[in-house]
Image 1: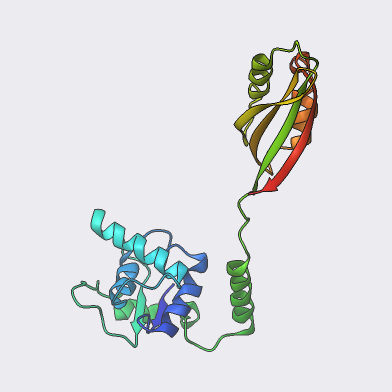
Image 2: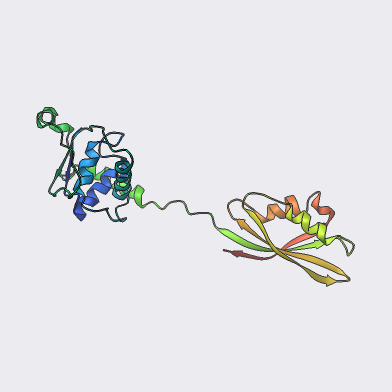
Length: 228
């Protein structure tokens, strides 16, 4: 299928090319070909990051040229309205006789008048491109009060038992012993959690106040809970 591009060295042309590459890895086909080199040569300098898809494609072709080159013939591409970039060899376009043998219905003119179907497809692609990506899961800093059974509880072993609770998304931090009266001290300890992976309530109910840690821990309370 032949492809016609218009002025890929202009802002309008780059914008149209960016829309075209939204659903494609290469200008034609499923591997880098001389069609990609033709368009690459027509772009005088690396495109702005504003054109996400063109920039991705351009950098990929540039890397291929540095590593191993591109030899696949491609399906034929015509670039109109721009001058080839100096110093870049532009592969010959598909033979004119072979091109004329292709039915006009098989050609893609990226700057021809859009049909209603093409407009709808472009709007759908734009909507997908604007759709926000899933945000990275947030984190929280939590300060816990861990209370022993009595003044005879070994607080060193109590802290070791608390820190023995390990799971993905949980990181234990600084700690200190705080007097509460009658010779009893409580453990205050910080932990950082990934919100989507760790539930503080589950940590307390299923680990800190459950066997075997409840041999040392009488109760556990949340003193402070802050989003990071």
